[in-house]
Length: 330
Image 1 (cartoon, rainbow, N blue to C red):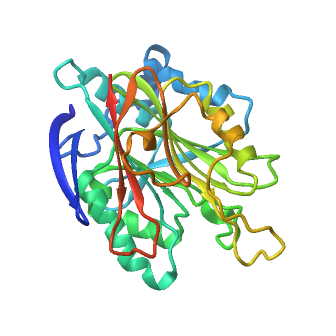
Image 2: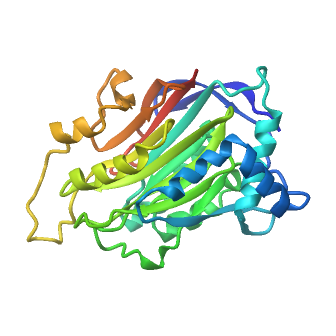
């Protein structure tokens, strides 16, 4: 199932966004056939996807996260070999005539007061349906949002889903991230906890291959207090990888309930933090209007170049807007 090129014009609350994006119009998750154990081992030994193993060789503690797909009646976890076989199928079908030209990414902090959640969640999923991003990275994705996502027909038909174990997450604490990533490409997911940072949280890395290029789409959330430590930790993890798209909330404010913590009103990244991520292209810099240092889209690759960046202002104005980026593949 080779990707085909389509041009989509979407009007999002008065903003005309012309997104040239590539996707399979009737994309279905391909079934796994044959002896997956044998084929997967052969594939891993000889393919570019073997580079994905480098994350497991890192010095940082990590936890593999289940990749799930919808199989018609339920969300089903894939084995590593099944994921690799699906990557192999796409890679074998690649040719100069059907290579992807652009990657579209969506990042959204979906925290919301409970009474506004149904409307807000519907608006978010409407955006997903309209532009079909290659990667959707959500922060503060609580249990009810994940259920909403899993029940969405578009998500069921088009996406691989990171299935984190949420039992250990305290959603009343600033230490949680509640990260959720959707990928239109066969992907492996890995969590890296921010240990020894005094803040907590983690990085959710999505590993896949596009046009034969190993790509890591990283999703993270960083509190204003202590974010220098967690951003450095995440950057150190990602520094070993050549093609990285890093999305997330880089300026989460402390809980008002924590009265003993100092109030920090500025979300601007200080010089030391900016120096840490200076090897990345900041997609916000290509936008005519600056959004904020809270929601970042960073790209580091000699094979990818930021092309467009948009803020999505939707009807639930009391909630944070999402951001969309279009990345050109060279």
